[in-house]
Length: 185
Image (cartoon, rainbow, N blue to C red):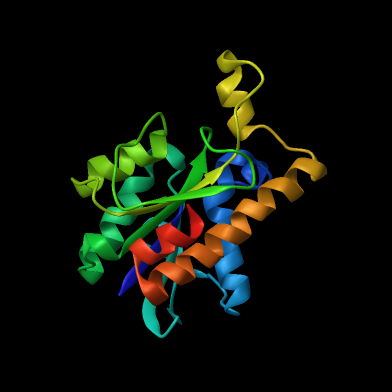
């Protein structure tokens, strides 16, 4: 069973922000597979489904970004999900807008949501799909950059990364992370 997690912030005010690219990717996967994510448990919204013939859970933690790991840990423990079957999708300032990068494992960088995930799971060995949001004009404006509203033009550019992330998740499930990394990185 795969656990596919998109990181983001739950309130409507954060919906159109760079920090919610993980939620947007989960929504795109759900849209492509005609899935409604409406179940509430494990401090998140989730749905159990089949993607690429594999039983999968789509999860959007509702704990706010900095506590995302709490929701993930609860669902991992409940369903006894192996860490190599966890895919976490999130925004990354070090990747160009509209691009993605896949990794098998690694540190959290400056991403507080990923710090929480690694801390709660007790490992950094799970698959990541990082969606590029680019750098802010001014480095000291990082918080406003990641949770500030974005223009429609930029939203279209970021949506390209969201679509690629959704495709990458299906490729990971279908053919494995190594083939997916060769295709998307």
